[in-house]
Image (cartoon, rainbow, N blue to C red; front, side):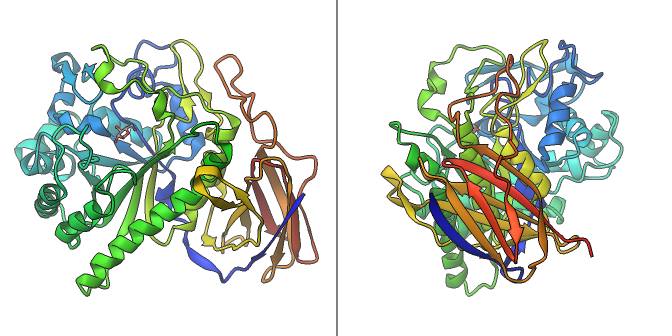
Length: 504
Ligand code: AHR
């Protein structure tokens, strides 16, 4: 058994929990839209063709924001192909995923679906093959009340009131050579700034996200952000971050330390943003939109150039394990820890494509292992995020060097006085005894303690066994006595412990 001590102190506030941290992503890719969100031929479909079971799980997951329609897809997309009478919509080649896009699901369907699941839409504009005019026209269609060609077109399509979409991404991963219309930082920075200025003329109330690097292994990483911000700093509200993690070479410890890598990735971007602010003598603190993150076994993907042209192919339908769920829980802790700068985060993607929800035709949709830490964190991380600095042994995290064995973050809801403690034990074979001294709220009792992991690390949920991996109440439930919370964290596990004030 290893030991880990920390202090839970209500004044150690990082920031309020941003609700938009629990976002997701629906891209026209593989079976995310067609066969996932939308499948009129499925018995679970409603009158709009939306799968009811996927909608129910989306609500249960606690998703607050959904980014749409891509991803790489957006860089070749003409949003006009996806509006108006469905029978008249054209099928097109989607170059990003070598797929045939039928366009039977488009903007208006997405807006109806996101209202039905109570999610805020986050729209991306095409800055790959299109530009300023097209972005402004899309915004006119969605946000202008009436009296113009495009706002009246929306009204004719059945939506009298403007959608009022607030969040807009200025393109997607424009630094990537795989992106249709890939650009240099200089060219993208100028285009993003001009598009931002024009879009704000259409609707000054929007919030804009400029593209950061596609990942921190890009050769232009760091310099890309600095150059793009040199152009866009005064015109955008957020810079985007993307990161996907996977286990390489059976290096489980390095994989378990993915959140350590995420922490330093975010810290590097914050430093770059603040460097540009300092150069400009600006008090502005650029906010971050981590609008693609997840585990993705990218090394198993054949690559988009090797695909056959077809509609809704099975692409990157990764099946997740218990171990993946532990890592996802920890990545969410990293996001919470950076809630002073990260305002938006979207797990990529929502259904079928590297997703917490899976569906098959004619069968009930099911929860992958990674569904659980997301749903529990989205539900119970309320109020303020509290910094917890555990004194912990380290583990040898292989390719990632030394990493703390135990990671802890907490939230406190000032209204109810309830705390949620999220903890991960990365140690490969030793349980950890966590002692949290509750300095400011000694009279707390444990109201819930659930754990994922500790055993069966390679188990997963399938259509036949949808509930094989679920959060479990441990035999050794955490106890709170004399102002100290004591919890045993199994080796390789994620836990959530909720505490409430003793009734007076
Ligand atoms: O989420 C899958 C893809 O990953 C997205 O289309 C792209 O933005 C990223 O590279």
